[in-house]
Length: 187
Image 1: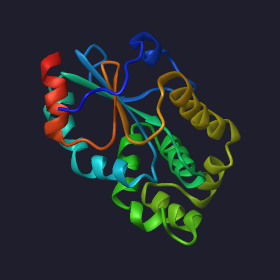
Image 2: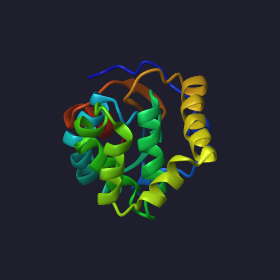
Image 3: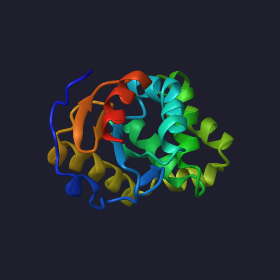
Image 4: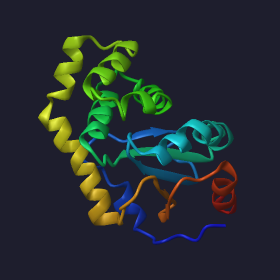
């Protein structure tokens, strides 16, 4: 079982940040998992494409875990992808993140990343105009970067994905088995 590489004050970790929290699961679930991730990180994509739905089924939908996603973009393209997820219609943040992770190879390394992201965004209901408006929202960009800076400065996040399970920090991709081994003793 992985050992935590640090522990943080839960109250500080859960304090309101620059952006509204993007979470699934009951607010009073016994276990809270916070994941800091980058949209261009292949390990983050692997976790979301292979493990996240299983974690949701086993723990979130049964009321045992509240799962929170936080932005930690390593590059401008990741920041743009997060901004688009934040601009998606209400309730579409998680589906947009999932779509972008599933298609990561098509836009993250594309020669013209903006054009590739525009095509993805159109599938999610964006127009050219709403896409441009979102990506030129300086306050949103500043807030996304502030989430990352707070994670780095206050909670020691320096790699993605980084998970906090009830305040204990774990770095790197995790399987369902690993998450279960860490969550089950807390239930």
